[in-house]
Picture 1: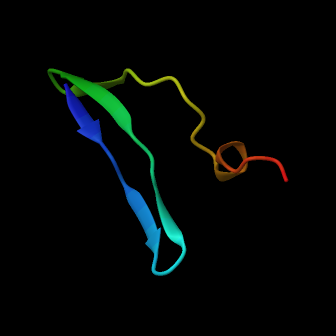
Picture 2: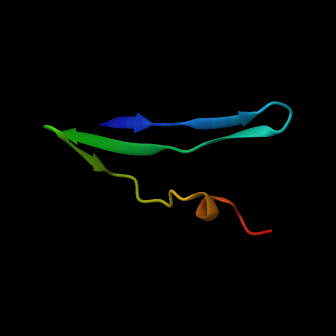
Amino acid sequence: MLSVEPGLYVLGLGGFRHSSTIQINGTAMELLTDCPRDLDSLIPPA
């Protein structure tokens, strides 16, 4: 299993890190993390 954790950081504001866990099966990848991936779903309502 691997953890893929891209991050976005803005100096003086803060940061965000999105984590996904994957498993490699031979030549295929299986995504184990069930969470939204589109930007609109990740931004909380005002």
